[in-house]
Image (cartoon, rainbow, N blue to C red; front, side):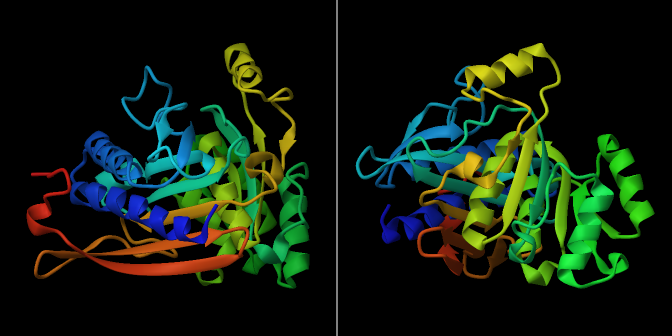
Length: 323
């Protein structure tokens, strides 16, 4: 994968974010997601890759575009796996809240885990804790090990997780341990990435979220020097069998970052739709312009680029109108 490709991919998430932004606060998550997906799919046509979507908007009969198995790119250049979430945080945009992003990752063909659409238990950390914790440990042991490794008291440790009823017991255990808790209303990828950015003040991400989002987070954390561990949570025999069908022979085993995104090169890019912990959202400016904030990262070079772009949008002609 060429260096120039990383910068080309930013254009994909930028357009997707710009398409979703007009729907912020309108209470219509489906239209926001549809606009982002259509824009992302259209922009892929200009990217020099032979891409196959391995994580996308669903199966062919569920999604009109960016479905699993769809070929994207101009069908020249390297053959790559493509993982996308055109709008990570559809409800966030609908409600006008923070931390919505447009996200994608690519890796050489056959490298990304074909994660089934089910829950995954996750433990994500930044570089300071990479290799020092285990998802197999009870949560009390995990936070005690983290505090010791970071040389801080448990009361200064901050853990982030999704605010969901299924996490009630986990939350109580964290409360009993005395750590700080920050709740996410949504935004699973952003939450798992947060510990790798010192400015967020987050030390760990725990709990369960979507398995496809876990692979996207793994791509980002691989670039950032962090770590994520996961364990699929099939709820019934049908989900268990689906894992087998997708090539996961031991569905309940612990998945390392290498299991999720391989050991080769990975490129990850994200553009903020609404303001977040480490990316600004789309901001409309005078003279028919809009500003976006993106991050693009690559494992091979360990380069992290933040990109602030100004876009000229005459009558927002390239975007689906929310009016």
